[in-house]
Amino acid sequence: MDILDSIRDALLEAQDVLNKFTQDPENIATIAKTAEIMRDVFERQGRIFTCGNGGSLCDAIHFAEECVGKFRDDRKPLPAMALSDAGSITCTANDFDFTEVFARPLSALGHPGDLLVALSTSGHSANVLRAAETAKARGMQVFGLLGRDGGELKHHCDIYLIAPGDTADRIQEIHIKVLHILIEHIERLMFPENY
Image (cartoon, rainbow, N blue to C red; front, side, top):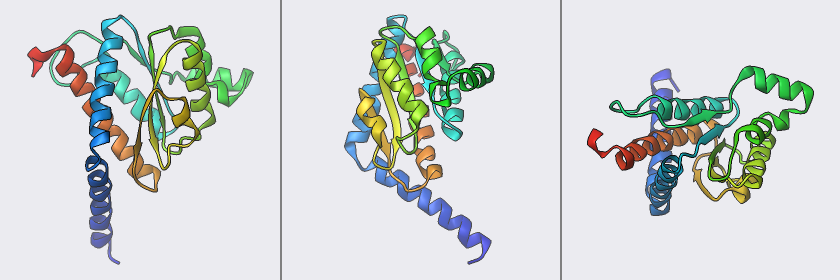
């Protein structure tokens, strides 16, 4: 197979995964419901926290900065924070355990009525599971962006989406699309004048 065929196959595979995801009406309804939950959190002066590992943490950071910054047009900042501070992560991993790197700051910063967005392509990331457990114990809601069969993490979520696909890259491609759609629809709900 030459490089052009390989590139074309990768794009067609990504398109196929997206088509599978969009053909399930439950996925569309879950995105709409999640946007409303997020809007409600912000309108109650709550905060959204995000976490994940590797590329999922990068997506978590991206979503948080879109909330604090803006997506389309200017509007007031929305309180969201990725649990991504390198000092906090390495301190907690060193002094406690890597499974606590997201749970520990949530214990310090999370309040009842806040929301955790937990990203895991496998649904088995121990540190994301601990974050979800901690969030629930603090009276927070948990939204999971998951892959494969959702893993153990789906049992700790109030609401979740499972991206189809067998590899982390294809799953993460769905996750970032969902995150972009969520921020757009939060803006549409809260700042309709921007649309």
